Length: 335
Image 1 (tube, helix red, strand yellow):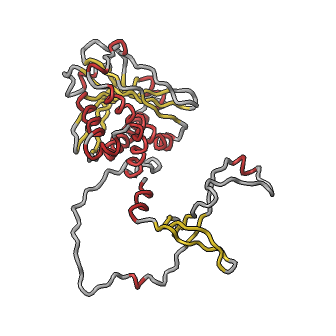
Image 2 (cartoon, rainbow, N blue to C red):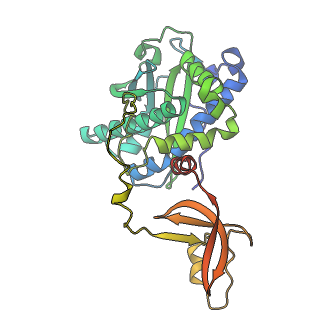
Image 3 (spheres, helix red, strand yellow):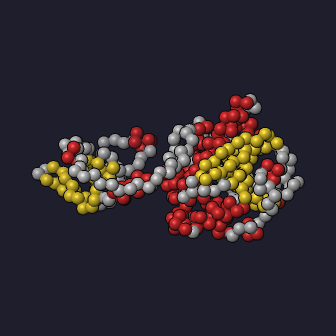
């Protein structure tokens, strides 16, 4: 199964060149963001559908919101209301044949499951984007009756001249491809790219070659990789104030006799199952570390220090050469 090269959906004859509405750089950055978020959320989709599936996105395109510019095709429609640090109404569309392929039949139960899937995907997608941008964002998805209505008739901002459209494709092992369109205001896309290339968050993600790594970190911070669960939105707590309690110690004396597992790791590598099964006495396994490199010292599975190996009275030991700071350990755990 290969990741599908998405075809341009209906209406491509009315495609507006991106130079007319957005800078090439901004369009490129948004395309990188969309692709990275979609691929990061792919495991959730696979787990939820219990099917092998690859997810990808096409390049952003722009269409005029003019009656009669799209062919009369029946679509399943969902309105997405974003609230919080950004307030927008977006439109999701899926052609009826694609919806039937995904739902399996046209019963009310199947339609409800399809809406639940789209709602979960939307929440996951925009929660990850919000985490990356530093926005507190909630998404509320509601189904709209199947219709051939033009998008401008369903959107409160439908009187604008242009819409930005992102098409997401899900490719299945049996060759089926599902296309899901997201219709957005041009200004919304512009605010996202502006946030990425300027301000505090921009310093982390402005270079789109680093964008995918930033998205993965945001996705993990959001805590969304949980078998089929909806993403958990961040909770805002009031700032904590430092206080002192007279007459109380640090409490460390209470845990000084607690035993902990400390281990020194020489090196490690990855092997395929086939390679593992072929191992025999005398074989040499190459490890992913050069001779002379320091060993990792771990406490309960967490690296806390590095050092060099030595022999003490015929027993191996490790001389500490570096203690990993708490800040570095926390950053590695989150990344």
